[in-house]
Image 1 (cartoon, helix red, strand yellow):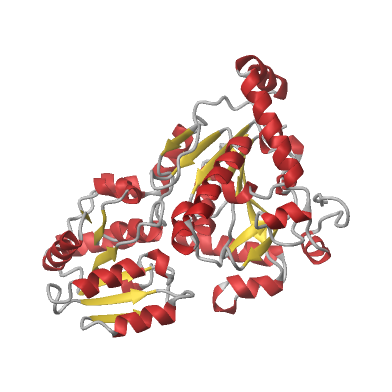
Image 2 (image 1 turned 180 degrees about the vertical axis):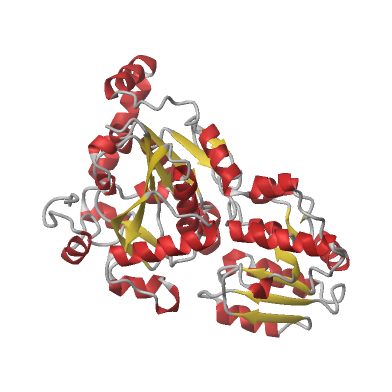
Length: 468
């Protein structure tokens, strides 16, 4: 076997869906494989055509996984500036309308052959393992790293009930403990997990850093780099900060008289956001969503982001990379951004008003090379390798017997309890009735005939498929 580390990155979304779990794992795969020292495989969901139209924007659809792979690679190369050298595999997925997310179908750990199963990175491990029925990740892979992307507790509290949030918290802890050796929390905004560490292992699309460099050059040449005022961009659902922002603007219309704000986004609540904005005396304009790197956004000076549901907000990082002032809540999700002089946090609505007025009156500070580096994917990759200790692991793969002996002598009792817990989850996740009771998509225990054909799975009926 190849002596290089083999890192398989499993994630819950794929381009052209512009969501964090589609974009960030893609960049992670690119930068982990860039130096050629590791073999990297990105494993992403494949949706059948009838579900692609529910998820992907602008009527973009794909007839085959290979067609989607071409799209993904072209998008990445245009932004990263180098050709990717990692593999892409697809697992069967289904779109859950009520959860507004993609869920895995069947045992997706089978996508990686046993002889290549070394290190698995589960982006949103709770999401990937709620309904997992198959080989135990810790048994198949030498090391399983979970990266927590989403503050599920906050969404459930807002949209459903405190009791459901309570149950989800324990369900998440249960499956993550069963299936992950170690857990990375991007910020303290997520729920706590055993064996977890807080570290932002995400970087910024290099395109935004290039925009920031141009803005800095304009500032240094005495030109007015920012000619527009304040804006916000995000998926247009109330939970993404629009409710908080419109309330702040509504409550302080007199203090913010003359303020103009542009809101950009597309989503389920677009019409309601537009109606709420019309009721304000302030000039709050609502526009359809578009790529944050679009030249339309380059000249805005102030990014207003009151959202507290994100774990680490990608658009905040992008705005800082472009040299803008960011006005955001003093919240654990923004802790990483506090090191940047252009990040202005507020604790109260009065603080928000003061920070917004001052930001519009002043010029952003010029981003230093050190700050630009800290935002980059190069630094994010270094942080990932360090926090997982993969930078210290010898290139030769540890044998399974070594790993098992170490585990059995170190924590036998704990391991036995964990094995029993894993067996219980395996049994529960194997029955259609219990799966549906806990929120699985009906018929998602195995891929259907259509997906088997599209993905080239050898067996569909009665058994889990395996790749040809």
